[in-house]
Length: 305
Ligand SMILES: NC(=O)C1=CN([C@@H]2O[C@H](COP(=O)(O)OP(=O)(O)OC[C@H]3O[C@@H](n4cnc5c(N)ncnc54)[C@H](OP(=O)(O)O)[C@@H]3O)[C@@H](O)[C@H]2O)C=CC1
Ligand SMILES: Nc1nc(=O)c2c([nH]1)NC[C@@H]1CN(c3ccc(C(=O)N[C@@H](CCC(=O)O)C(=O)O)cc3)C=[N+]21
View (tube, rainbow, N blue to C red):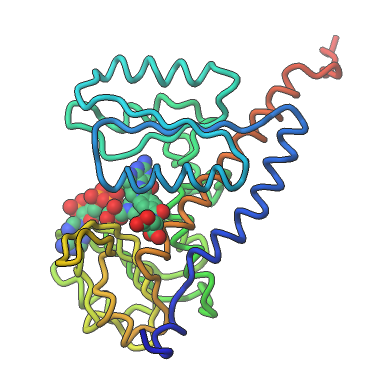
């Protein structure tokens, strides 16, 4: 890679390492107070993208001293059984956080499972009461990938106020929350999806382009305004003559040539997503501690006579 391109890279691994330092200290404090966070990560069936995510969750949790329990259930598990498992985690005081990996097999509505996770244990902020707060710009636990992607843009000197941004992909977990987070920061946001007539018309006018679709090579350099930031959220496993490889949704070489900043895949948004999940796990444990202490406090307000 040329020096000119290397200078444009937004280094997700470095940002994640910094985040983990603060998280490790927070975990230590929680442990001292008797509220050691413990994260349970649930997968149903066998999905490459989820495997990579869970592998990196485990590694990162180890680094910050957080207890981590991955659970994989067979693809034919019933929705009722899975709901029962989630309810069990909700009432288990040793478990302070839960993440449900997507995608789920077709017979399970992922939304139903996300809604079953207690809002104080909902590490991805996907319970309706948590995701709903995003329209009020109130984010105690925001959707990890969206928060991480916006964090990457904040690493550039670009001012978000008034920035023209195009978001490609509008899933409930990534594209839509990104659009809301950016609006809260004062950006002018354009959201594209599979019915958008001409994505390039929108991406070419943007100062920053976010792409979260799941199609390798979807965004090419001719779709990017010179000097713009490219935040690539896609994680795609492709086969190459040298074996399987992880790439994003942007065609890296052509985009890096024209962009002012670009997130590599791997090494971009992914590691920051994982660190954001752990930060949410700390927040969740703290919230549960606060709720517990409030409920069992000696100094209950006196009932008025
Ligand atoms: N880096 C990270 O931390 C994470 C990465 N990912 C990756 O991000 C990618 C997207 O994930 P996710 O949002 O969950 O995926 P979804 O499949 O849920 O959503 C994809 C979105 O892309 C839109 N889309 C499909 N085709 C086009 C097209 N040709 N042009 C424009 N938009 C299109 C779809 O629109 P419509 O609904 O209208 O069809 C949909 O909104 C995946 O590669 C995933 O692995 C996901 C989470 C975390
Ligand atoms: N409910 C839910 N939320 C998600 O956020 C979610 C999900 N389900 N299902 C799967 C996808 C995919 N995903 C990844 C996140 C980080 C990396 C990651 O850490 N990648 C590293 C390492 C890549 C590697 O090890 O090869 C990187 O990009 O540098 C990968 C993939 C989250 N997803």
